[in-house]
Amino acid sequence: MSLPPILTSTEQVADLAQKLAEYTIIAVDLEADSMHNYQEKVCLLQFSTANETVLIDPLAGANLEPLKQLLADPQVRKIFHAADYDIRCLARDFNIEINGLFDTMISCQFLGEEKFGLADVLRKYFEVELDKQYQRADWSKRPLTEGMIRYAAEDTNHLHRLVEILEQQLIEKGRLEWVQEEFSLLEKVRFAVHDGPLFLRFKGAGTLAPRQLAVLENLLQWRDEEARRRDCPLYKVLGNKSLLHLAKLKPTGRKKLQEVEGLSPRLSERYGGKLLHQVAMALDLPEAELPVYPRGERRQKDLQVDKRLNRLKDWRKKIAAELALDPGVLINNALLEELARKQPRCEGDFPQIDLLKNWQRKVLGEGILRILN
Image 1 (cartoon, rainbow, N blue to C red):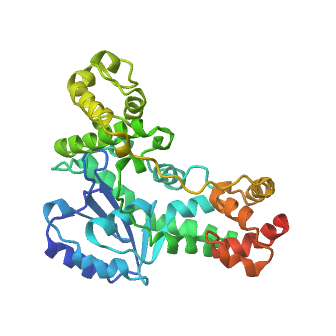
Image 2 (cartoon, helix red, strand yellow):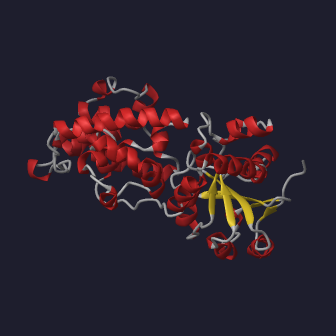
Image 3 (cartoon, helix red, strand yellow):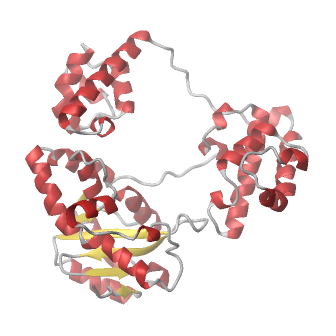
């Protein structure tokens, strides 16, 4: 297979947009550099029609504005595999909206496929082997190697044929309407904008006392600045496990740093002084200035709710087995908990269940009411 063209100018992108507008279905994918840089960004985009594949290099200065209208047009189907991250990135980096989505990964999940990663799916249906070494490649590096270009093209090359197979199976199982609703919801996902202390987004922070929380926040702020300075991901400076251990331990000398989980002698040598400085500043904070982890209103334990939840889980397991679906795909735990709490008595109560989707109401509503009543 010859290498696909890589577009590097806005003029070329405009020509591509004009050509793609002649099609009613296109396959789309992107590559980003989240494992290699401080601020992740889209580094490459892939577009495939049934006839050809073209790559776009936004890092070379190609503006994607000419593609906005096409990608937002619900009359043109866009095939993605695992679109969630891609949709968020396109909205954040280019203010691009995706409508007319068909997600082959979600389709595989709703067909009961046990393995639904793209490599597994292409191997199963087309005996195509994707070279996994490029999954973690640094896509911000230039020039791209021949292997990277071929890998990127393979991500969209086969999606047209794959959709034909999956869509037919979904129709046969009566599940096309289910996934269409999932696609519509997925089109609206966006990255959340976070404000406030960094510890609010740190797993395990809720277990810490105020003084430890102050240490953690200082360490998180320092790590963020260091990662920004080095232009690398946060984990490449220091891992979360080490930061949490530092916050709990509150070391005041280099000898104590030896006890910190995951803090190698090399890292201790490189960052020891800075870490101890951040800890010392937190230890010097007056009590009145210590942060407090915000607690939501604690819901009182209700044995009746717990009983209903357990009944719903048992029922879900049975129905999921009958449909050959993963229970979490059929109905997730958050929705089960909402149903157990609000206990709808009839179909007219379903609108108050925020997480309940239309296809779930149609397919599972009768069973839900039977179990709850």
